[in-house]
Figure 1 (spheres, helix red, strand yellow):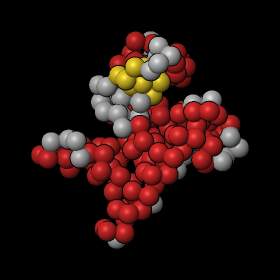
Figure 2 (figure 1 turned 180 degrees about the vertical axis):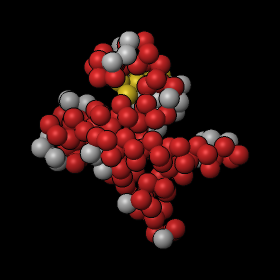
Figure 3 (figure 1 turned 45 degrees about the vertical axis):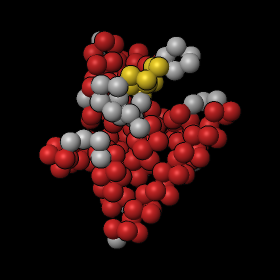
Length: 161
């Protein structure tokens, strides 16, 4: 599983300038593994979420429902009041951290994913789908993207393993 995380991190970090890649890759890996450990979620599933979401630091992607998704894991703004309460910080600080701090973004994503995973009775793919949306009509397409990410990771593992 660690090899999976490393390969996915390398794939995601591909947008970072080459000189910064080793440092950024190590930080991303550390953030994902730490957040996954704290929230008892599979690190490989976190990597899949990261690959599917495709965000980056400082990014805000608007949604059709008027909300936006923030940072690498594209954490939806609807979660900000709960994240702020959980972190015991003002909502504006939670927004800035989730959008601009790699480890905070991974931690928020792992917290949300962990809640969804528990609410789905530990069913991994249901938890992944719920990370994206509680609406079943929006979950299928997301799961298809997640499956493509898993295939991409496995393909990379075959080439590097």
